[in-house]
Amino acid sequence: MTDTAVTRTTCAIVGGGPAGMMLALLLARGDVDVTVLEKHGDFLRDFRGDTVHASTLTLLDQLGLGDEFARLPHRLITSLTLPVGTDDSVAMDFGLLPGAHKHIAMVPQWDFLGMLLESAEREPTFRISMKTAATVLITNGDKVVGVRHRDERNNTGELYADLVVCCDGRDSVLRADSGLPMKSWPTPMDIEWFRLSRRPTDRKGLGMVIGGGGMLVYIDRGDYFQLALPIRKGTDGQWRAGGIEAMRRTVAEIAPWLADRVEELRSVDDVKVLGVQLNRLRRWYRDGLLCIGDAAHAMSPVGGVGINLAVQDAVAAARLLAGPLRTGSVRPRTLRRIQRRRIPSTLVTQTVQRLMHRFTIAPALRETNAASAHTEPNRLRVLLKRHPRLLILPACLFAIGFRPESAPAFARRPAAGPARAADSARAGGAGP
Image 1 (cartoon, rainbow, N blue to C red):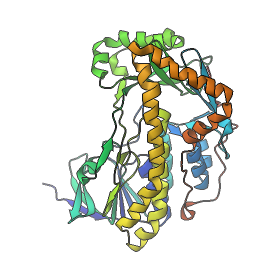
Image 2 (cartoon, helix red, strand yellow):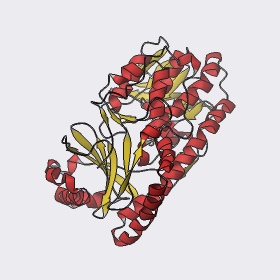
Image 3 (tube, one colour):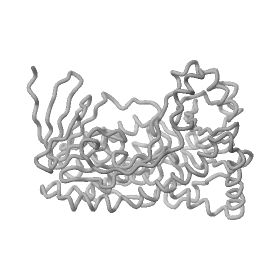
Image 4 (tube, rainbow, N blue to C red):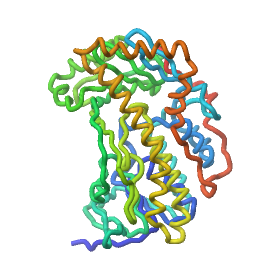
């Protein structure tokens, strides 16, 4: 029987996703001893969020990582096509955005996380344990003092810390163990993810189409499309029981311009399901524990804003935590300040997503109520055609966020230049 290994750090971060890796990098640059526990052996998982927003690109510039990001394989999206009825659409032009980055970037998340990891590994106070899954919180009375973990060989360990930060996503094991209260909302959909080849004459960028009794989101990944097909909540089993041919017909009916390649879907195993959640913790913390990112507020995939919010949570947390962590003076009131700063963005974003669920997605998924599915979009079309400048509001909310965060002074490095918008080989709009 293997003895339990006991280690010590100042801040234990559970989860090596966007929130966890960004927080670890910033705290390490702030001379805080930080250890990341990541249950996987690498970041190579398909069909995860790959959208890096304008405010995150600005943050990378502040961190001196703009040029490193520009060298990653990515595509710049300069507009987003939104359907306003079955036969019309409007383009959300990111050229209206303030600041240097008038675009968003689509980059494989494993490359983005790898860049953050390489930067963090340059800091002497950073450590990471891959293939190490957190299993339960360690407490002393009501205070969290560490986390138990298990590696791929079933070896157990205990990591003690002044603060444990849960960044392990919407299915966080430690969040469930914490007893923190949660509020959830029903969602009308789950998402079927798959990919089909893309041709040079196809649509570019990021967009959505409605038709044929459903809707489809397309993401231009260069030589292929990453596609999201919303289905009614809890019906994935029915879809799979219908077989791949039924899925092919659905895609071709919604987006006829993809009909000539649906045969690339060889079986239902080529389609992955995402169970959509929309929830948030009523309280993000307890003494010795903080939750951020999806562990604090699971977002709908509507707008692809989950990464942006997670990164902004990490920046706000690092700014408020670095000093207290260095002096051993983290108190619940410090953690409360982080939630108070970040909760407005969470509330606004989730409210917008709930409205989109109700007025756009649910009607598009109700084939028996097709008439109501078109009434509101037509009114929206009239409004946006008359007042196109109104599009700056959703563009800013989508690409920048309600309350963007700037890098704290201790984490900044000399400017290495922004990810170049002029890289026309990668740039693309989202037009028909």
